[in-house]
Amino acid sequence: MSDFNRGFSPISAGRADMAVDAGLRSFMLGVYNKVALGLVVSAALAYATSAVPAIRDLLYVTSPDGRLAGVTVLGMAVQWSPLIAVLIGMFAMRNPSPKSSGMYYWTIVALIGAGLGFIGLLYTGA
Image 1 (cartoon, rainbow, N blue to C red):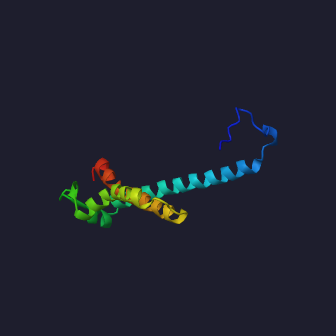
Image 2: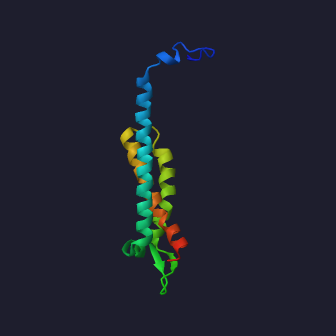
Image 3: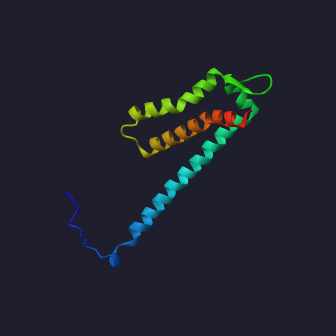
């Protein structure tokens, strides 16, 4: 039932198996690396959607003086897609496999990055 034995450990700290700690450290290092790479991908997509003129013109409407004037239909879809993906994922990912949860993570990272380009345009005044 429970491994709780009133605060007493059957194995002393000196005899504990260090392989468990090494395995846990390796696993967590992989998680941190994946999160860091996700932040880099998200930042790159946010930069691309706000600074690359070909992509920016597909998503946003600019006035003749070059300022942000509005959002196109595609831009609106890109901005709302992270929320829609999270809501769909809550219902679709009941029993995820490692492959499907990885694909879901990278989809969310990409959609959030593309959607954050709008904030880059707002704060740069472009």
